[in-house]
Length: 123
Image (cartoon, rainbow, N blue to C red; front, side, top):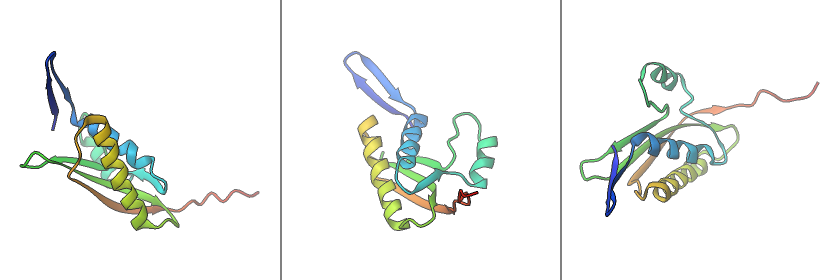
C-alpha cells in the first residue's frame, strides 16, 4: 500500500515501509513494551522476507481503502497487559495519523510474550 497525494506541484507517495516504521517506533515508545516482533517466526521471516520486511507488523489496505495495522509485541513482566495493548493501539493510531494524515481504521495488537529481566544486578 502506498499513500499517494496529489498537490498543485505534482504528486508524492508514502511507501508502506515508512508507515510500518512509524507504527513500530510508536509501539516501542509505549511504556511496558519490551520489543516489537521479537519472536522466532518474525526473525525467520526477516531472514527470508526480502527487502523492506518489517518483523512484527503487517499493514493491510482493505477493499474500502481503509488501513489496518497488525502488530506483535513482547511486554515487560509485571505490566497490566490490557492497558499496555490499549496504549499501543492509541499511540500507533495517533503517530501514523500525524505523520501521514491517514488514520488507521484498526490497530490490532497481539501480545506474543513476556520479557522477564533475569539481570538482577548484585554481586
